Structure formats: C-alpha cells, structure tokens
Image (tube, rainbow, N blue to C red):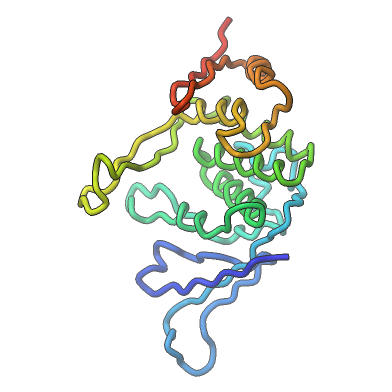
Length: 249
C-alpha cells in the first residue's frame, strides 16, 4: 500500500524545493507533455510513499554514520530527491524540514521517515540527521516489533553519542516572548542531542513510543554505562535538566 502526493513547483520555487518527491519505485512523473496548459513551464512531481512498516536493512550499518548503502537501496523513495541543507553561500536554500513535513504522521509515514533521514545522513553527516534517523528507526520498531530494527535503532542512538556528542538541534518558539508578526521571526534555541538521545531511551513519554530498552528504565542507565556514558535523568515537569557525561572512570 502507498500514499500518493503531488506538488506543483513553479519556476521561482524549484531552486529551493528541487525535486520535491519521487515515486517509490523511482519513476519521476514530470511536466506536462503535448499541448501547453495552465501549468506550462512548471514541473509537476509525484511521489508514492510506502505505508507498510516492514524494512529490509540495506546493509549492516545502514542509518549509521558513515555508511551510505541506503543510497543504493532500490526501496528508498528519496534516492534522487535533493535534500537541501546548510548551504553557506545561500542560507535560505533549504528544503529538509519542508520535505520532512510532507510525510504523513503516524504509522503510515514511519517507513518513509526512516528512508528520508537515513538518506539525509548519508549525504551530509550531522548529529541532527543521525538523531532523527535513530528516532525514525525507534518509531518503526514501535510499530513492527522487529528485533533487528530494535538493535539498529539502539546502534543509531549510540552513534549520536559516539560521533556527535556535542551536537544540537534547533527549535523555535515562543509567541509569549515574540509575537508571530514580529519581523525578527521566532526565537531559535538549541537543544543538546546527547540529552535528547538519553531521554528518548529512558522515558516513554519523551517519544510516545515503546522504550527500546525494555523493562525497568534503570536498565537504560546500565546500557549507557556499557556504551561509555553516564546519565542523570531529567526531572518533571519540563524534563529539561538531564545531563549526559562521558564515563572516564
């Protein structure tokens, strides 16, 4: 089963969006052939996203820094989709989160989210891309219960700590501080990915998914110790004070 999405990209938007979406089997439906129509000069792209939750991992380390085998996976619907981010010469040329937001929420979009973030990671190694790949694998396991995906999600979360310990992801807020019509825009604030990773593993409510380390949450602390880290869990109500330390002793 699959969902189909269509996007009309005008000439002025193509630079930012690139090829917005692909058909899952790699067939690009582009343009209008024959007689000119109302959309003449525009590119019409369609993608069919997988809606099942069964994933055959392309290789042992797919979705893990520095493996790029996902780019050779024939089931990957994003293989030829330009995922644009961090162009120092054109800071506004980004489409990553716009494309990500086009994927349907919940179970039907879980497999597509995995492919999207694993593709982004293979093309640009960053803590943010690694973290969201781990979260997508976590979500897939929540739905399909496959122990292979469970192990891969844990491996991906560990890669955040091992390879991108000091990395952050940036959120924006807050209408109470700066109203929506303020020309300066929303306020950006960074959150450490090491803390988000530990919290995702420790606390069910952090993700809404089943915890990858099943049983008592204290078992997560043991797993983190085996990886070489110590975690001081965050406290309610905001859960913003968790701390992760490299275990040097």
